Image (cartoon, rainbow, N blue to C red):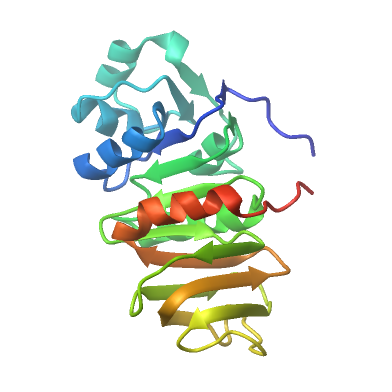
Length: 228
C-alpha cells in the first residue's frame, strides 16, 4: 500500500495536538521545540481553547466542534473519512518532518493511549515523542545513547517479541527475551549514561518528563529505522 499524500511538510519538528488531556504546559513546551502546530480532529478545539491556532487539522472530523470549524475555516481542515485508522495515525502518516512532538494523547482514555502506541509500532520510521504530565514516550530507534543521571527511571515495554542490549542500566537487557505477554523492562534505573540497542522495531521507551530535552538531543545522533 502506498503512503498517504503529505498534508504538512516541514524541515523542523512539528507539534501534534490531541483531543485527550491536553495541558497548557505540554502544548507550550512542545511548540517551543517544534513550532508548527497540527491538530488531530477535536484536538483543534483543545488547542484553540489554549490560545493556539493549528496550521492544519487532520482526522475524520467527528469530534471537532461547529465553533472550531467556523474559527478555523475549511482551508485548514483535512477530512479523512476512512475508519480503518485512528486520527493519530491519520496525522502521523501525513506529516513529513524530522520529528513529531505529540501532546494530548497520553491521558483520559486507556484504549486511545494503547491505539497510539500501536500506531508507533506500525510506523517505526516516523519519529514521534509523546509528551505527558509525568512521562515522555517513544518507539525506540535501533540505538540511542542517553546521558542519564544515576537513578533515573528507564522503562521499556515490548510490543513484539525481541531481544536487546544495554550499557549503564542497573538491570542489563542482554540475554532477555522480551515479549508483550512475557518479560518486560519497566521500572529499570540508570546507573549512569545509558546505551540501548535493538535489532527489531517494537520497543517502547518511557522516561521522566524532565528528560525531554536530553532525549531530543540524543535522538539527533540516533539512527532511524528504514522504511519498509
